[in-house]
Image 1 (cartoon, rainbow, N blue to C red):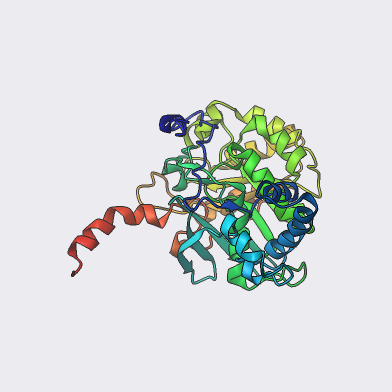
Image 2 (image 1 turned 45 degrees about the horizontal axis):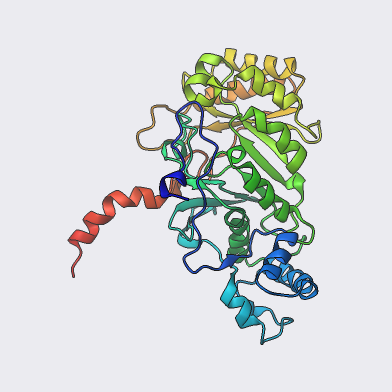
Length: 397
């Protein structure tokens, strides 16, 4: 394949390109085992030369070591013959993304800047609470959706993350929290939200395959009820998400009129509010026990009036949606053209929705001091890249 056919076209503001560029092969030529299904793992061993019966046995052992014990190398695998471990080491890898930087907020939120094997940077965030710990996972390097209030949306889309790179985020968090061997009780990491960098439904196959490993009872073992996937409204993929993944759905709504949503969520020009809400009404598995979450960032004098709140209630009722609304105070970033709504305005908006019988809590911003709050993710490496040459030029030899 020629070089120019492997590049991902940079999408426009309205209709992001969904065809990923081909993943770069590893420089060491090894096959990555993290992120493979059980069948793919067995096939990889057979392709490398193992007899089918031995490949079946070894694949079960490898699966257990990778996802239940958190092994990062074959030398740790005590029930695999010592003589076979160098062969595995030569042909395969159990890599994690490189941790470039790890930060801890004053409120306990953790943010990691991660680097893929081909040198692309992305971020993930862990948010601890009294009764849960939520990992915010990225699905792409960058984003093309260009939501006007979102710092991540100002990045160019580089490429989709592979299943291995999505699963490995959960595994890295487990590494950092000391939660191996894997066990369902007493975990700090209890929930996952696909709300990091990127639009998960524009990387559907890789997200689906990764989450199946995360949800596998013999794998990382998180219930689908503890996983939420957030979309800005990729309507054609929403039904497949419910049918093939089955996790909770969150929708980045942020406005209740075409005019405002067209401005702040440009994807609305392709899939309008009516189409989006109908797709929510049709979402498989949504009911009062598994409500759809509408994310709504509060922007001063843009989408925060009492009339907006009443229209939100009307729309939820019109489409008979089992819904809750997360009101998100806008998290500022340099160059942003919006301001956060005043606290009294947010409370008034919330009260109108609550009084209609719809839950509308105001989310407490977390990790603002390390740019880990909602809409703030933009790789520190990209921010540093402009200043780093100047620093290096002025550094003593």
